Amino acid sequence: MEGKHPLALLATDVRMVVEREMSVFTPILFHWCPDAGVVASVHLYQYYGKKLKPFLENVSLSDHAISVLSAAHNMEHYLIQAFNSKDGENDVGSFSFIKLISTR
Picture (cartoon, rainbow, N blue to C red):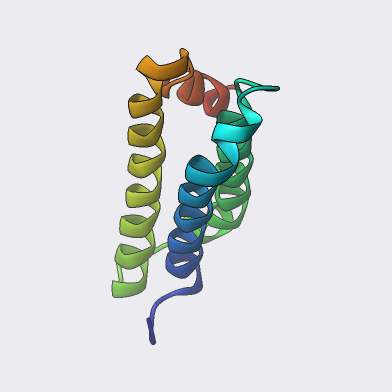
């Protein structure tokens, strides 16, 4: 982890939080709010996006930029895959997630 850009580390941390959310909290909260996992993930995604935006405005192709963009891509890919797997279980899936993140 040493030498990694803070935004790359943040993307990894956000992914870990979403994993925990999906495995621990969402199954319980689903009884009261079927969209709980989507809502939490969208907020985390938006938080990361707000941190990433200033970086992208001044980005140049460097090792740090590549690591940040790769980590951001992996996080986004994980979120979409997580909701694809939930799609069949409770009608909340990647479509809902993508629709929510594109409207905000």
